[in-house]
Length: 432
Image 1 (cartoon, rainbow, N blue to C red):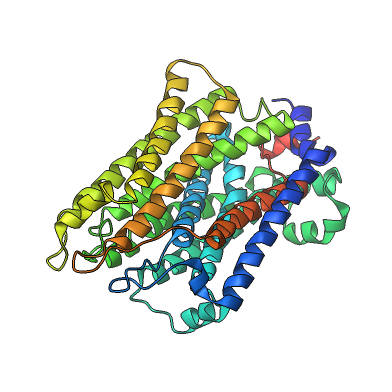
Image 2 (image 1 turned 180 degrees about the vertical axis):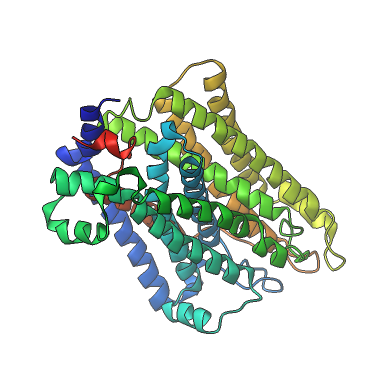
């Protein structure tokens, strides 16, 4: 790629803002307001409006779509930052633009994940009480602790990553919004352009390496160790959930990069940045991750048939016969079909941008359904001595999910006009 092309690609998103952009911002804001309405309603009328109830003798399900969405957003954040770190650590230059997408998505995904914990607790003060009286015996508490640590690390990683491109577009070209000049100057404190490729890249590499070290702890370490012995809940028995979470993270992260990269390519004509070849190859890796994730899901269900002494092993069979069976089958199909499509694209040397984006989106929805099924199923049939629980997501939970999705989309729309969403080549390639 020539020098003018590299610079123009960095500046492209800032040069024209059409009506479609403002329309998307407007829709996202409306959905976020719907989320606020849902939160205020639950706060003022009580958590009972969600339809959730006590586990066990009350025949209710205390966790539902909000916890499924919490896991889904966490998977996205972990997977996106892991793939970005892999690209940076191993110097995969062809995929550097995807690394930037992962860096931008990760903090937003972790924010959405945390919001669903707040929604599930129902009252903000419960969040403060949970922090003050932290229940270290709770796997969810350790989930939040570890994800918060990774979230902080991902923010530092993003800041270090964008400094070179911010310098090229702000101080040299004056392309970025002048109203945010103080913010950009703060980001560039200590930046020395004369140091060339050594400036920031060494720290970026070490931060990426730290992310890769931290990922196994978040994805397959401490939480499964704590939660694995809970044999009274199907699908949560055994440590297989750790590797499954890690495989799910890479699946959701890769599918997100495919989806966002495809949208950016269409919106800004970035055919030479997010190329057919790299999108096809990333699709193959996404399919491989998804296949591994589906194996993990199967093993999670299978290990439930060997439940602890206090649980009835036959309870796992109910997930294939009860009201959640359809959700399970749809979730598996929504992951399996895109997997086949993405792999066939590479095998046949064909590519469709619309098909890639569409099936990546379907896969994301499939994993969300699977994680919700996993959450609800383990509480709907806790033990044969208790009545089966009943659960249907309430309108408030749907508003929460649509609101956090809109919030992440709104964040990316804002990033597109305030930060370099494309990172191309070495420092010398973006110099005039």
